[in-house]
Length: 256
Ligand SMILES: [Zn+2]
Ligand SMILES: [Zn+2]
Image (cartoon, rainbow, N blue to C red):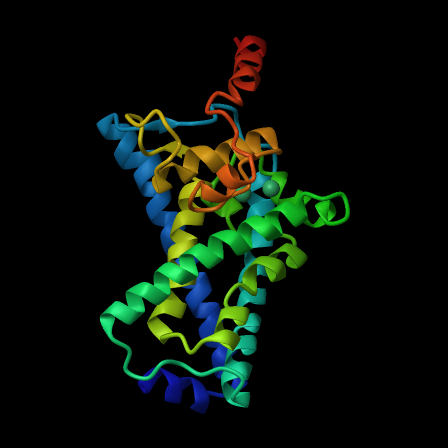
């Protein structure tokens, strides 16, 4: 298969540079599209609205860019892990997979990604690991640049999501690639501080991850899930939709 032979024949340096271009490229593109939609096109057409009206903290964007650049450097280097597994024969890619197989594998990986994120996120909220998660939570008002604004330990915890599935099953390269791409789109939406579905009053839709994750940043506890709300429902950690209203009212009272 083309991708497998390409990966097997590439050197470690080529894989790292490719990783930097891949993660840097999709991060910048998705953030740019997000900003264009939520700060130019949607406001001009009157669709949706900003969720948290409070201003960004001083120096927030600079800090987010620095942490994001570190995460991209780390994720590029991290490409050595799946590449090394393929080189050593610890993992293999599916040969000429059918479309049905790719779709099924992608669905399994999305559900695994959700459970993996939830478990690691809960761990990051324990008193032992909290210090590695606080840099991300310094962005109380989120921006697309908050997405990769992670302490390196948190980036490593979240970034290893594909290694266990790869060791257990020969996934198709397309299904494996769909995880970082789709994850980043959802993560970007989650940090957009914009209500994409103003007509939906319940936080059930996956596009409502922007409302759910905005509440996580505003309140710190609750709504630990990523793309879907099912893990928070199972473990009883759902935040009510009006959880941050008191904070906004307080801010409005002080600033009016
Ligand atoms: Zn958190
Ligand atoms: Zn976040």
